Length: 611
Image (tube, rainbow, N blue to C red):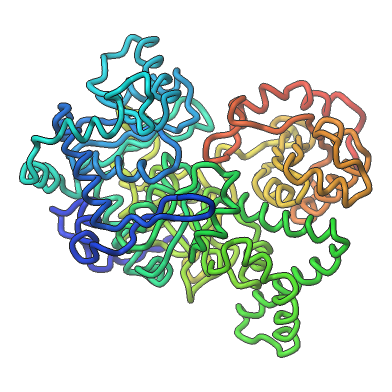
């Protein structure tokens, strides 16, 4: 199959917009808990739909009084927290356009976004990030902002907080606010999201109210509406500046689901157990870490083999579900390991989790089978910033592990002659901001070139096979897609990141980093001092042998010419601070190649590669 589409379910009226979802919840279910915020030791305080709407309206009136007009750009630089979502909606209520900025951005990165998008005001969460914004404005000589408000208002600057913003709007009437809110329609611009930029300077993706509102409508009209319901709940911990979390944030409001926020990943485990979500949004690395933590815990307690047998049973059980027939002995074995192993993992994730949505990269099929086998179904999706996150997604009752599912309503997918995935429809942006040359390169006859390779099976399920720009061509002319090898190796408990190299080289190689979090437990389980740091552990022969085994397993999935012949274990991990990773945890290959050039050159300058 070369092309697949999903018809629209009932569509929204053209004069509607994103804010209608919050208005509806406040009108129909005013006392229902729409959000929850951490309070005390392991507690959560609910925020009702009426309370959320009132706070949004206050902030929106303040923005209007400050001089923010229809279509004006307002920057939002903050960690994931309730105020992020409330300010986002307030900007939309005021008829303005939100420009998210990752909280990890430097002053020069902030300056680029402010200048390119024409931001007139900014809301930041802390004094430190507000200072980054001021530095960006002053250093680059940008036009002065009409306002810079801080969620956590610093004592040294009274009047810079959100409370002052609300006082500013005291004279703006509800009628004025409603006129401004309802004047925005589906075709109007809602946000400019800058790609995290694995190559070159970030481009601003112009997403409309229709992109978000209609995509939410189509999602809830599908069987995914069984996952995100009024009785459902989730904890958001992915940066809200990322389109994936942003879409789910609007989706939960549209469904009336209860949503909590976690700004500090160190608190995620405790938050899951106290909040007890029914569904979760995460990148594949989160699921890998959950699995690896359970494995290492079992190994350190001398129960590694029992865990591995239990994991095998979970995978076999899930695969049997696909066949439509689960043998009785397998059911009995699953029940046994459920009491012994699976229940503990489910409890660590809150105990009520039934579904998880994975995006931002490929998930190992065996890992997906493992989680479904223990009772948590992971629905993989595919999308980009340019597509408001999901183009396709797996569905309850129609899951096909190893694929990223079927298109959502109004979306279309086509596979080009060279295997590139093309898309158009509900989720597709209207274009890049101030980049006509980028539009000309990315669009052809209304179809958007995603830059990813993929295939469609006979039923229209999409499978991702690689990234077009990441294809390596060895000196011998062999095309190699790094993702398949990298994903297989990175799933190992000891490994944090791996990057395959070999473009214009005589053979394929890799550089590998160790996971500092799991390293102590792994060392202890393998008879090594758990106090060894990453640099010291990288020199240990047992560590190298373990990495070699992981590489050998990955090589077994590709041809000999595509296999990794040599690797180097680095003395430190890739990091966002050094520019190696995007905020959404994608590798910036050019930066990594530059900073680890010596290690890569050493691979090819050394002895002949291992056959």
